[in-house]
Image 1 (cartoon, rainbow, N blue to C red):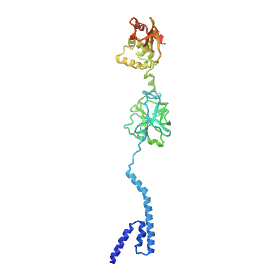
Image 2: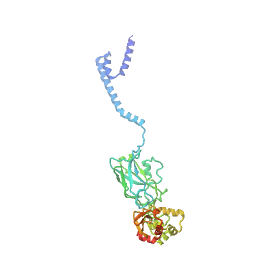
Image 3: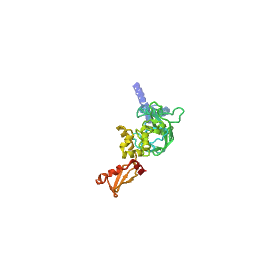
Image 4: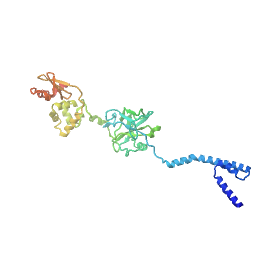
Length: 365
């Protein structure tokens, strides 16, 4: 019986060691230990519990950090915004010539929301810079800043930087900025693919740089500035020299024959085409149909302006002409008539045909 009682006491003590501290006093009331021993034991247990709690608390942040690292894998930051070019540069581009967009305006750069590409503004000004990129970059759409940096093209040894003008430390406010002065200083013929791109990015060292993705234009070639001296104009203007038209080379045979016929600019060219297209084609050595269509189509892109000229003929007929001798209106006794509405007894066709090319030049000049 005594051995059984001692065994039960040991089991009770084992269970008590696992019970909370607030049950200690109640437990000791049933323990036959002397009161002095119980008080010492209580203090000892309190100290042990306090040390254990403090040790556990000190380990909590470390355990949480280790757990978060295991549950959340590290991944590169995804940019929230992106810089874009509102319009593409106008081509061809020549070294030393100011770069404009395809509408003839300065290049404009905007800040957009990455996923939707909708324009947005930033709460504070952003410093950006322009760089020259290899035309073969990128090979994929999700390039990194490191890949962008590797694609930057530097100037040839002993040459000036490839871009001049508004290139670096450009301030973007309200999510938009324009590049009013920008030129290439060298052509693109010396790199393998012969193509450049213009890239834009946030200036290095800016804290928010990782949240704004870079952007770039489409690829293009940059021609030597000497080629600009002979380039065609798109669209041409009436005062352009006639060799600015397609299929008419500067100082070529067609150019010389046109000059000999007093056709020096595109207005002269179009006036003769309106009055006597057969004569014009004869001057061009009987140009083939394809070449003839190309040069006429190019010349027809000219803005004719709003000037009107009047030729007074016989029978109270007045013929109103535009700047290239096309008939705009005909009046008889000061009453306007369309050509198809004229009475048959008026031989207006003779009046028009009687105006030779030399007299037209006198009228319009």
